[in-house]
Length: 561
Image (cartoon, rainbow, N blue to C red; front, side, top):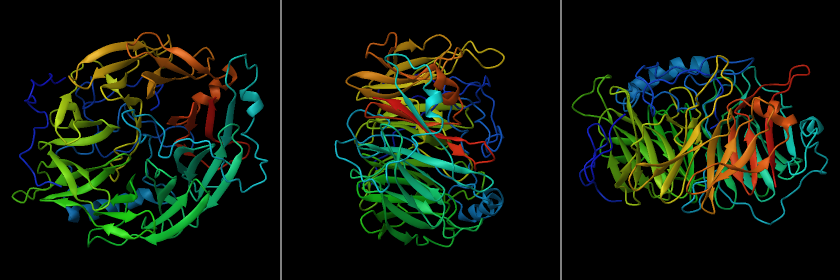
């Protein structure tokens, strides 16, 4: 664990302040041990390019290291960054595992409000009624009476939908959920569906001609979103089309091709972000910014010196991570540096730059406002969490001996997926993040963890708050000065719950409790994406398969006010 840097001078191995530049989850239940490079974890290094291990029927496996971000993708010696020729060779090999409906995608959760960093994606709930294209006869979820059996006074009713859509043999990743007024929306395969928040009835469905292959974390303020979609329905189709969907109206809008940014832009993968009225799409070999109004291209790959932007995070601002090549060392094993920037969404021009030392790889963004960035160093087997000021200067770096963790999705060598984490929340002065579970038995049951509050001014821990015995919990948002947390189902059939923690820590106070009959269903969600918005929690299964006989995968579940 690196020590806290002295004031004004980051410690050895930390990203250093650069010379002046031109202006411009969900807790896992397995007892596996985490690997190197993450908070509080031992120095044993996994294959940085390995996909997740095979899990249960029809699913990709659980992440190798429970609760932590995916292994660092070559922090410092990534042979694919900054070397277009190597990208092509890697992509050819990668296409062997992409076919048949397996896509590189991401989603997450954030909010445009300041300074709270909660989990509502994009447009905020409002009192306006939604468009209802159907007859209102949706079933409100499969076996909804069973999961609410024996409901007690004060408990919140749960609604559930199972997947009924026929998919390819590899299934499909789900994106979202996004709440807009009285509708919550998810996207999957060739459909975007809006459900009534209160009871889960289907309100509308937008059918697409080809599968979704990438999705941004946020919507615009008025509920528009742009997806990356395949050019056709073949297994080798490129992800080179954009499709706008107005989620507030439940209608598809413009569709536009993604122009190539050069010889090595092979349209594999997709890392998208929305900020203002701009959507950016990064892929292997290029990046582009587009107007959400009409789909017209605004700019190509943002470049600063020898650095090219290859990952983005959106919401209240547009953050870019660029890989910087060394013109004096073209070896594939040469250590590379990375550049953190805030860009003007409309022009792609940088507002500020922050250069990380060679060997550091920016892995995740835990909060957009304030900006909190998680990075790893593969060679040094260490990690760093830094908070930045609005003008791109280091405000603090975390000093913690706790096994800090966040629930982060993503796999493969294509997408960095900067915002694909739940399990963190922040306000102007404090970061809230979970610890790893403890007291695990042989079967990985009965684990408990803490939520740690970290002072963003100093990087020091302020307090720990323990989850209920035998339960895991993670922060979702900060509302009214209190930390909103999700408590997973218990081993004694306790249903999942929402609770709050005061700004001074202490014992969580449960504010929403789901019925015990829902516990097994809630536990069955695979790598769920959890959104808290407007007094309700939404669990979206990370991946679903085709219906098979009487087998159905859970798709989306919700309870709340």
